[in-house]
Amino acid sequence: MAEGNVTHTYAVTGMTCEHCVRAVTEELSALPGVDEVRVDLAAGTATVTSTAPLSEASVRAAVDEAGYELAVGGA
Image (cartoon, rainbow, N blue to C red):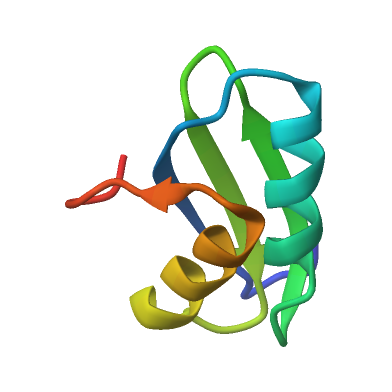
C-alpha cells in the first residue's frame, strides 16, 4: 500500500458466500484508483484502499453492479 492512500470500510448487505465476495471484490477493484479491496463476509464489509477518496456514488454503483447493496451510513 503506497503512502498517502485512502482506506475506507463500507457495509455491504446481501453477501452470503464466497461468490458474493468475488463479485464485490471484482467490481470495486475496477474503480479508478483502487489499489486493494478486502471483503469480510462475516462482518458484511468491504474495505477499499485507493489513491484518492472515492465518491459514495461510485462505490454504491459498483456494489449494485455486483448485485448487492451498500448499507446506508457505511460501516
